Length: 359
Image (spheres, rainbow, N blue to C red):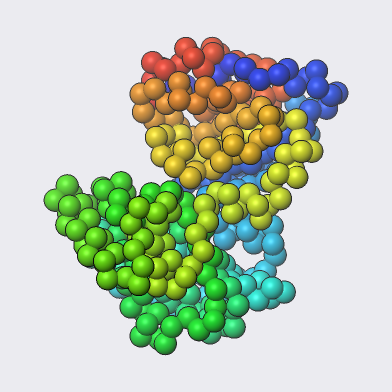
């Protein structure tokens, strides 16, 4: 699919709804290239240049970039804390403090993220979540009554063992409550099978990791296996749920709630969703699927960096349109095209189109 090609709009003609159609522009980050805010600004510029209105609403699903999105919406300040990366190297990671509510925002990717290790260094069996535990301890020490932990984009598959150990050695979390914003719905026991390969695990390593997860699950105060969301962060979500009574939330849903998404949808004629790559995992707790479920009958247009997998387009036939754009200029043009009504061909005819274009 070429970036300039557009999937045909199948929703209502926005130009007939009111003289100035209003779009709720709600993209996630295009990982490795553009932040959610940058994507939202570019699309919104295109919409406005074409004569429409745009409500910029950058979003996240609990993975990398969640703190930036929530800080923009909730206010607060970032702080630094000494911790360890997935391979045990000392680093300083940022977390956020909301003074008015005495809540902390912690992002697992900042201490235990895949981006912290090079492709050559990836070792799913050795990688530890200890650094995330250390960030939670920093929030405890600051006096947080609640820590919201965004879980996603991680290098680990340790079932949360590293984080639990770090927390235990430091005397626990005290009375601090935990709310986990999880970027996938995968259960604990499937974490290695589903995500291990992208973290550097061979088929044999995936089998060993799965056995280790099952052993860990049997030793926890309650068994996280079979429960949705517990596999997030290589099983850290399940470990914190089992050992510390953490509340499990879908990351995309949690973020949309924090951004007053439903109210903003009600004030809009259509929604623009987006993320760096539309693929088979996009429905597994990711933002585009959540936006579709909450769009309240408004047409949902998707602008993505790339589309992967045979049949992906057919699986997303409920989208009003699908556009591929990976640069600021392309995103601006895609935003303008939403009002111009430019299109290439219907979604139903796109299943066999090349879909390997990268942002």
